[in-house]
Length: 79
Image (cartoon, one colour):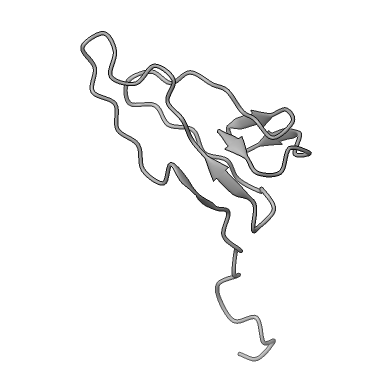
């Protein structure tokens, strides 16, 4: 996963970023999720070994922008 912001470093969910890049390996049935990234940062997910060794590789949301998280529930202080 490559972020548009190259200053992002550290662990975000399942991913460790260095200079805006997280590299990891997934096995059958596994997934990885980045959480806690700042809203508005663009990202691109690339599968470097896609469709090899008889496996079919699929991905969703492989390019986009980290959304702003809107709290759910009653935030107005009223019940």
